[in-house]
Length: 47
Image (cartoon, rainbow, N blue to C red; front, side, top):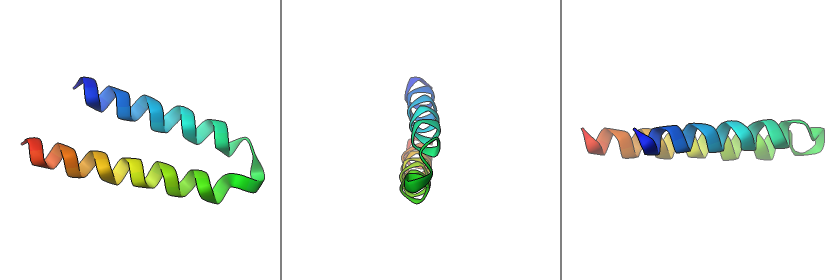
C-alpha cells in the first residue's frame, strides 16, 4: 500500500504542478496517465 500511496501522491502533485502551466497540459496528461497505467499493471501483478 505504500507504493500505492507513493504513486498517487507523485502523479497528483506532478499533474497539478504541470496543469498550472497551460502550454504543458498535454505532457501532464500523458505523464499522469502513464503513471496510472504503470501502477495498475504493477498492482495486478501483486495480486
